[in-house]
Image (cartoon, rainbow, N blue to C red; front, side, top):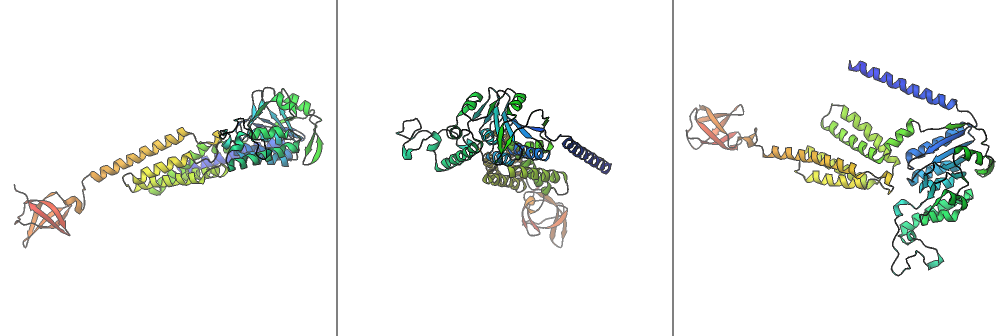
Length: 460
């Protein structure tokens, strides 16, 4: 019956996979050439959004789209994902129109870089952009003693900012970010000086101010107005001028497919963290109880998915190493109890590794502390349960073997040629006693000497 159910389940999986494939191919074939592809970034910038944008631009090119309209509303995100998205935009043969919308949306941090990279930049009213200082050093550093507190300095005649007074590493990161965004601004003919201020000082602009300061090209109420205003605008595509021809073009919405959605789920640090632990504990359970099967299969799948997620996330290998060390010590404690030494040390290593696992200061890519606490408390509870059982087993009197013989009372069953024999644990043992013994005497064992019980006769 189980084999029949497995085959039926496999048929259903194959059926739905084939159906999804056919539908996806059909949807791509029905896209009219010359369409405007509409993409949406309404989340933090990460591996999933980068994959979605890069594949969206590639498919728009394959479908002979006239333009890509990217609507964004993002607080920022990971530098690696942002650079992958910008590289795709810069290499695109299809003009990319970036639109910060709807009203109330923002293009902060990584979103500002992306806006500068696009061929045409537009914003809806009541939106903002800026605050592009790298998150890891975005906290202003206090002025040094003797400074005027205004962030100015005269050394080398350079204008300073609070960030500029940080460590050498901070200055390197800031200067790299400034050079990057200035290069984008110069490529697109936008305000490079304000872009530098957005990085060094973390300043922001409203849509109207951004238009006045030549940070963006248009302010539009909605997509219809944006496409109407952008029609006929001259943009540079890979060094060649092109006039946007958007009048009357059909709009095709390219939504995130199952791959992007799946990637978005597994690259959530909390999900990847839990998947890794399920995988490790599943394999430990399988190795400790070989042949069960299910924990090993589930554990291996979860671990491989988690490792793929960590491969695209900014993880600290020191944190990952501490977590693996902690889990290994806890497993060793469960299998070979050391009365807390391995277990407590493993729990400490596990918690410290979990805290430093994500090598980024972006809040959206930090493991939530409640998740760490919950898993640490659960692991600790299981650990102390194992320790409690080990202590009880240690304190319980032994029921078998020579150690269990001490203090037990047995009866003399035979006396053969002067040698008394008593039955202990189902076997006859020779007995040595300073007193003469007879069949039926009760004796108390106080020592085991090889195969001989050393006893004392009990008075009746």
